[in-house]
Length: 370
Picture 1 (cartoon, rainbow, N blue to C red):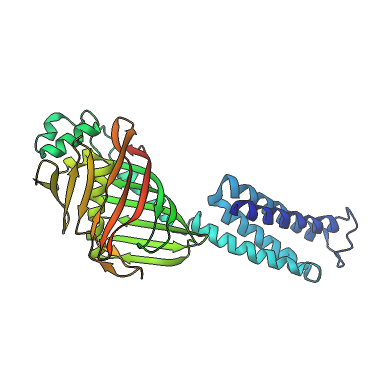
Picture 2: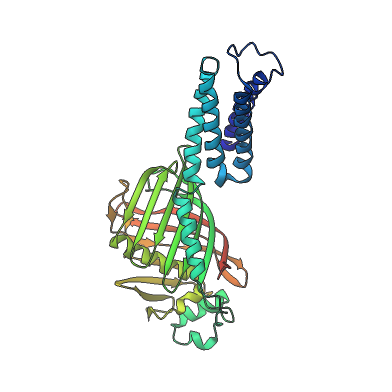
């Protein structure tokens, strides 16, 4: 709907500029335009019309370039309007509206926003992944793992598949900031890399009818979470060592849920608690976190919880110490693997447990190509 309305405004505005061209070249009498327009100025009106109409095409075909075509079209349009100010001054109003659209597009789809940063981080990560063929996981590799983890890796079908160097996940679902907040529909994509560990998570949502986007970035020595309304207005902007520690839990969770073969990482220390529960201590740099993995009788991972990943308060700034868990509900086929297809993330708040995100897994690609 947004593209249709924006495209309609651009198309109508662009076509109106043809009046200046017609007047300048005397192709038809236009009584609406009182002041004369020279042929060079008539050409300027034509160029403005062409560029504005071309920006309509980019809006649908190449949205990441819409900001450029739209911005150039506005410049030509406003210069043309200035030369015929008496007759065309009200054309400044749609130009102002279009300028707002162009600025939004430059940050939401263009080179200046969080999405562009996410794409740059992913490109850099893919460029650093070794192009040599990854060694295959063998039964012998599983021997050092606790029995419940071995069963899970066999259940997931990782034996005989390549070791994990990176993976990409696409999900849909809904999210909210607290148990009392309304749900927001989301689509999200993430890329994880190893050696060194990195995680980049991109989401798009709608809040009160307005678009929201967010970027979680976990690097070598820092982690951040940034959420913006209309791709411009900061809603959440957190970083630092507390975030780094909490997102280290998320990294281990990603490995457990989406890329079970990554659990062969020697940075994980295991301790079996009983036939269905295993403690995992994962260390990355100065951060060491503890989680518990819970397995079903089938061998599938059923839940994952940790006390080392705090919740974000509704003020978007304060981190609250609460148990975090990710119960998993369904499994499906992803290439050669059997992986979780539906799950949620929960916090154990003082007022009671609540789910803050529910996800359906659309695609998991292990070791994606560059």
